[in-house]
Structure formats: C-alpha cells, structure tokens
Image 1 (cartoon, one colour):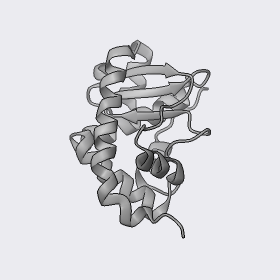
Image 2 (cartoon, helix red, strand yellow):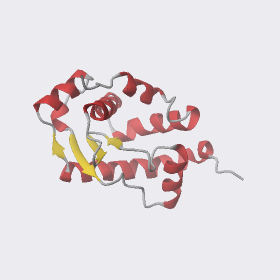
Image 3 (spheres, rainbow, N blue to C red):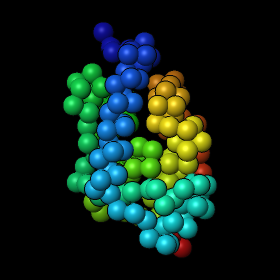
Image 4 (tube, rainbow, N blue to C red):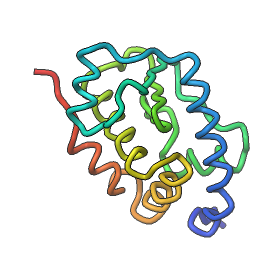
Length: 153
C-alpha cells in the first residue's frame, strides 16, 4: 500500500506551517542580508521588501524532525539530496557551493510569492496542494520561479 499524500495533506499542513515558520525564524537569526547587487536582483524578480531577505548557507537543507512530515517532504521531492535551496518567507537556505545568481533569483521569486500570499500560513497550503496535485516540476509556483531566474551573463 502506498502513502496517499493527497488525503494526508489536511493533517500535514499545520505541521508544515509550524516547521516553515520555525525555519524562517532560524534563518532570520543566522542568515546574511543581501548586498546591493542581490537587492537589485530581488527587486528585479518582484520582491517588494528585499531588505528583509536573509540567506543562510548550510551543508544540506534541514529535514523536519516529525517523521510523517519528513516522509511527505521526501516523497514529494520538496526535500532530499538533490535540493539545493529552499525559501521560507524571507528566509532562504542555500547549500554550500550553490550560491549563484540563478538559484538566488529563483528563491527570491518564492519570497515574492510569499509576499503576495501575505504569510507562510497563507502561502504553504496552496503551494503544497500544487505539489501533491501536479508534482514539484509542474507546480505553478515552481514554473513561475523558473520563469524569473536570472542567469549569469
């Protein structure tokens, strides 16, 4: 029997929101503000308050401690060994060695999406529903973030 993420989503969303808010708070304490060049990139992809963004470079993205939430994150592809960046509101994790304008602009666009939603609690249910319904790669928020990536020239 396979794990049905779609039916589990209503139970997972409150846990995911609490975890994401904790990650955002942690990044806010340890993350670095953007320099002028990156402030410009963030503004260029639509972020209204790029001065609030903090970036924390980490060896790997953290996994939720809750086993059910961890399983869901790995099963949907939201987290795992191939993931190198993740955004929680204005907090962004970037794995060591992957701090590029391309990845940062993608993550900045997610910060813009959080701004548009108004909060982590407002953004995550829609985002997670997209992931469960059409998959990570085809999720509209991911398509939008990819469309706003800035490639080094």
